Length: 137
Image (tube, rainbow, N blue to C red; front, side, top):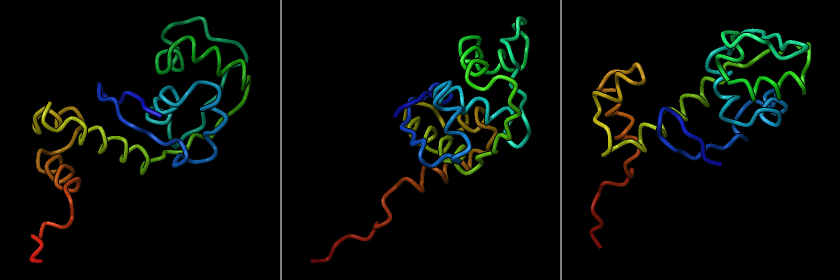
């Protein structure tokens, strides 16, 4: 499955996400679930009984009206303990940075992701083949 993370289309595997997110992924799809985890991961999230009317409601502002409607329909009144999924989100970020190599400069990527330029370069270096030694025979 592919999704867009910070304007980069990358392959993601929901199997690496915590099982507790499975019902949410089924209800609102993976990209909206990732937005929830990025914003509300590590805290409890109350799912309203009915869709909030205000566009500035935290759920609507984060995942959009359509996904909020779906979530309220599937989990009305639930209090969801959202995991932080730090390792998964880091893997997504690093994959997006690798995918942007050659298209976006390291300094710009560093600013975009809140990293140092050196860290972006390290992520790029980690993507290179491990075996750099030339075969002798």
